[in-house]
Image 1 (cartoon, rainbow over the protein chains, first blue to last red):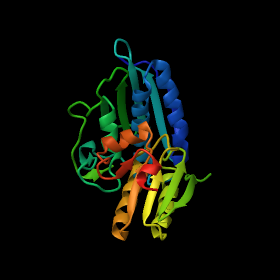
Image 2: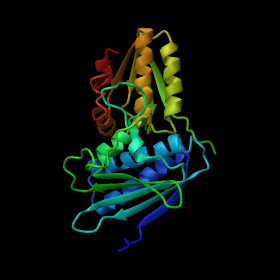
Image 3: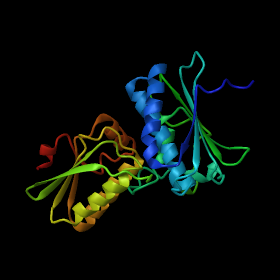
Length: 160
Length: 114
């Protein structure tokens, strides 16, 4: 069964200065759906980190590449939001990507860890047309945001 | 259109300390500017740097990385770096990253001995 069309679908250039506009859009959408301020903040940070990773690591700071965002309200009874973030960077093996250990104090490597920590579902997929898709789901009533479900955490070499 | 934004960072000398007060969100577009200002501050005669985050409602991991880097540079230079007045969202990212124990974090700038 195909899923319904996203409520919001936007294409954003890979420019850091546009991240604030995406955060504002997502914040408003999440508020309308019923997210409390804390959960909204967690979702916004997770998506911001995902886009930051694409800009830095996927596109190497090239300012004219495209990132596609789709936002869907999750169907009842589970209130929440599904965000799909797609790009056309060179495909990578999600199994090879990990955030750094939090016991290691150094700049960088926090982004992926935060995304996993702050969402209920976090999954990388290869797009059939090339590039990658990150699927994130965040629930409104998520009382204790923690690591994403088994299988979505991928210890490996690269750090994002 | 450039891809990096300058941000307002107010500097205020207080005795042997230098207070830096960034204003606004710190994300990938602004953290390079904050890094530049912190680097200059570390090179200044001030013995302590106090980063007053009371005017920063949002920070992402690039901002955190910038502060971790500054902390490491301060330690090498024999200086102290203190973070003051973190807003809830900013405090939260430091807690998730287990960095509240790594930095000296105080509730108010005055509590940093400034």
